[in-house]
Length: 173
Image 1 (cartoon, rainbow, N blue to C red):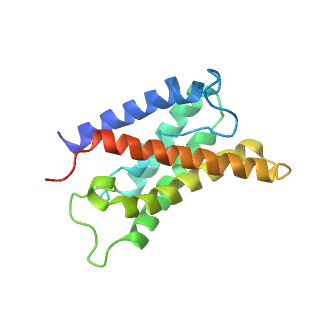
Image 2 (image 1 turned 90 degrees about the vertical axis):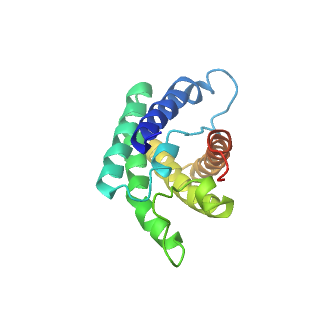
């Protein structure tokens, strides 16, 4: 399947899961206010290494804005997802192997390995959640409650990202 088609499908699949399922977990009584997973950001994390930064930033803004429209959060998701799209190339450069990444490899668990993806995913997911939840609260008065929300939500989002990759991606042959 073409990489463009695969990313378009991933865009809409992750957006639908976020909007229809994950944003309603609290209403269904499944989650509490400390665990608010954000799986849509996996779209940005899994964009190929060769994707130009400006395209990543535009796509990050678009997917964040669509989440904002669906839950009326006035640009919080757009800002947070645009931020990780901005930081992504800097992080991948600092995590790159000595010889660089193989051509056509992706920042996936399958192509880069578990340890690499745990570091990469943890950092970007934490950055996203930090911006999202601190902007949402806009106060330092409940710093530790907000920090707990960031850590628990980021951990749960990372687990969902790993589950997604174990189910979608097959091992290299």
